[in-house]
Length: 139
Image (cartoon, rainbow, N blue to C red; front, top):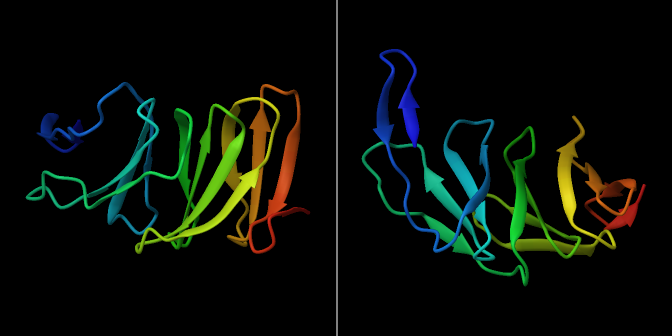
């Protein structure tokens, strides 16, 4: 649900996943919302209240998607799944830029550095890693 904080009422409900929604991310430019789910998809939604359907569905994950986060410049979306795979998507096109076998267990969180090129990932495998998303190498 999207709430109108000024008046405290529901403004919009986003429906489209076939299983539970695990995480949502708001783009820093204010144009998009990403939601990720156990259905192994990431759905991109417009923040325009008149649009009810997802703009696109990203389907490259092979496991439940647990985390989504936009870069500070809103040009990238990082998603991570239960198998330890991190994917980097170009936004707003939705093109898959990188797929990284980042961890041996599920990824619990991701964070972009201010340079929008470094991604930090944390996993149940007890590791935290810093990635250069332009090369998919640990930085």
